[in-house]
Length: 88
Image (cartoon, rainbow, N blue to C red; front, side):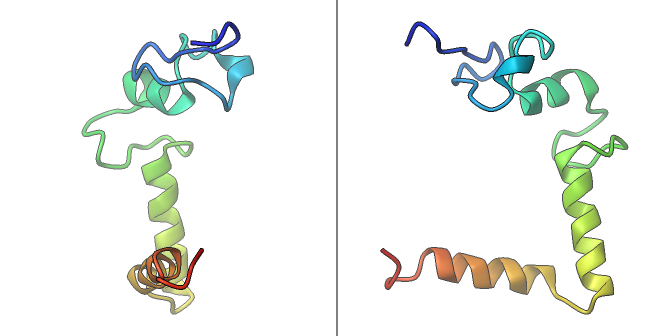
């Protein structure tokens, strides 16, 4: 561990993003803090907190569907681009 490295007490991985909030988030990543203290119910299901990543993902999915887009197709296209044999 480097001298300036901050480790999350929940997942034990380095905290890089939101380092300035390390103490506020109880020495955790924001996402670890959210699921530890703010998230109600099943961690794999959206809670009512607008900052919840699942809540936001569901909001984006609904907006895409309203625009006539298929969220599953969009993800499939991006996966194919990401793992294309031509990608270097």
